[in-house]
Length: 169
Image: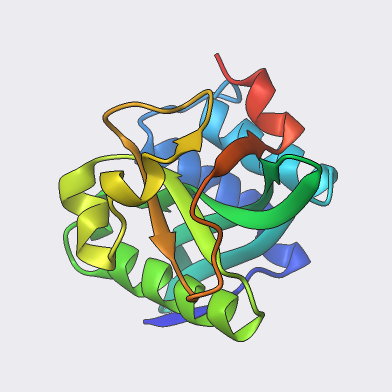
């Protein structure tokens, strides 16, 4: 299994992985459409794939978001979506993708990542509800979590996701 950045030749296969992971066999899959819109709008900061025996079996996208603190606008990252082919789930593929993503983001100087998901799952990677609790966000609630990648990460503010998220259901 290798984890690597997406290439232009992966785009169709990435859409297939996302649709299969989220149980959708049609083009109306919100998560697949989200990635396409983020890519189109140049808001997809990092897109990684997991490949096994020449086949894509997983994908994770990290997009730009903004944290507003008064007149300041600070960059941050959103993890969404994470997708693994059903027959490869529960085998560590998601873990490999998320951890590789965090490594790339730290090296790129990013300081904070937000995710909307299962706290038990994402807590394994250091995400926490308490780290996100001081941020205002349209997604605030029992699944909104944050992970500080650096000590310089902001600790409060209003989180604004990329425009593509406004198109979700």
